[in-house]
Amino acid sequence: MIKVHRDWNKMIFLSGPRQVGKTTLAQEYRKRYQHSIYFNWDNFDDQKRLLKDPYFFRNMDRSPPEKPLVIFDEIHKYARWKNYLKGVYDTYAKDFDFLVTGSSRLDLLKRGGDSLMGRYIPLKLMPFSVGELEEQLAKRSDFMDTWVDEIKTPSSYSGAFEKLWQLSGFPDPLSHKDTGYYRIWQEERKKAILREDVQYISHVRELSQLGLLANLLPDRVGSPLSINALKEDIGTAFETVRDWITLLENLYYCFRLYPYTGRLARTLRKETKLYLYDWNEVTDDSFRFENMMAVHLMKAVETWNAMGEKACSLFYIRDKEKREVDFVVMEGKKPLFLVEVKTNNLNLSPSLLYYQEKLNAPVAFQVINTTKILRKSRENKKLQWICSADCFLATLP
Figure: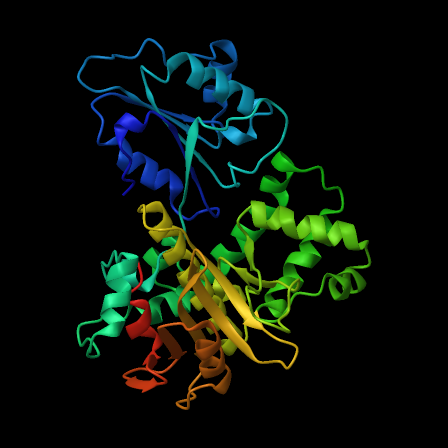
């Protein structure tokens, strides 16, 4: 549930992938208010109401002690949405609370209008995680304390990892518990992104080529992303492919990780790695596992930042000698921990140990897609774990 201090007096921008549960969460949050109103731009009657009377909500009951809540769902599809919300906030911020939801990155959309800077707080809703299904909400400090202390493999896991592995982290297929339904849902969701969502933030005409790009991306997961190779496969310009990937990022279809450089020598500095929010689109099990780990770690970083912890960020490391660590979580310029993903290798990766020493990271994890593994070691006064994915992920938020 959203936890926002009312006295912040800001609009809340809740964004995230299509069908991740934004509207459901908004409706649940609505129950906290005695008076509220829900507006959905996809509803034709709501569109007419706004166009006829832009401040249609102003006559709501505003009985003290609390302000009413106004929810704007998918309002970014309105061509003048930024100017509209600026006027709404500047006129009524003292009288109403505002929650704005959308399946695009509301904080990055630049489609005309004045800036909304200083008027909103962005929040991101991501797919369900193992820790969430296991009812965890670990702070950064809690997570670090857990793995520094001696722990045992929990015996009470509900099988959350296996559910997410088979059905993704999206609520609809999870609730149906059927892989056949998931495949139908996945295809329809992807079509909706490429045919409906794209038109509201871009003027892409070559939708068939954009669809081809989206179909190629699952096979690029886990490796440095080559836009040159993609442009050859699609038969279009470098700049076009680059812009389309950014477009798909803004629509929460995929996200990229950048290489960590810092004080390290001979590391890659430009090549990004790409992952999908729906890791089940990746057919290769090893890369799907890495993608699933990337989404969980990104969600943990986003959650810790939203909870008011020190700013965290997620990178990967790869150098010209091809030594690589899949993920490094940073707190400012300080490395918190490293994560290397393996299918079933119980021998610590030399690259993981190398970069743990180079970065002076206190903890390094080798996470494997096998159950009931939990091994702890120390080298050069630093801690290493080889652990099963369900055990590791259950301690992340």
